[in-house]
Image 1: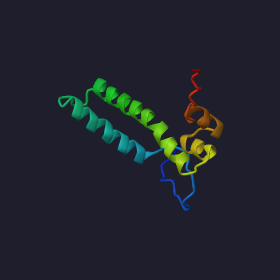
Image 2: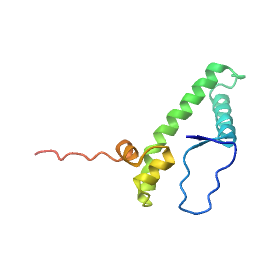
Image 3: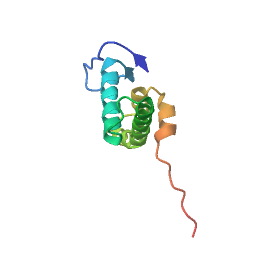
Amino acid sequence: MTTTNHRPRLTQPDQMPTPVVDDLSATVLDEAINALGELRTPYWLGNSAVRLHALASLLAQAHALLPDAVAQARDQDLTWDQIGALLGLTGPTAARRYRPATNPRKEV
């Protein structure tokens, strides 16, 4: 992941940025943590345990969404190398992690 204080600029539709940790991401995530904390525990008032639980819940939700997002990217003809770059992984690592498992044929 890249840490930056400037917004990545995409000049071509096929440009694939690596993951970016920046003020924009931090702001969106902070707002999501606060919103989820308030929805689940209205009296939380900045409680660190509630904040930690909300962050962990958002991380788990993001991880659960990744396989479908990768499948959609593959359906749109992105290569494993392109997907890997978007995830901060190598192409082979992305393929190993997210390629759908094939079901072995059941013997009758």
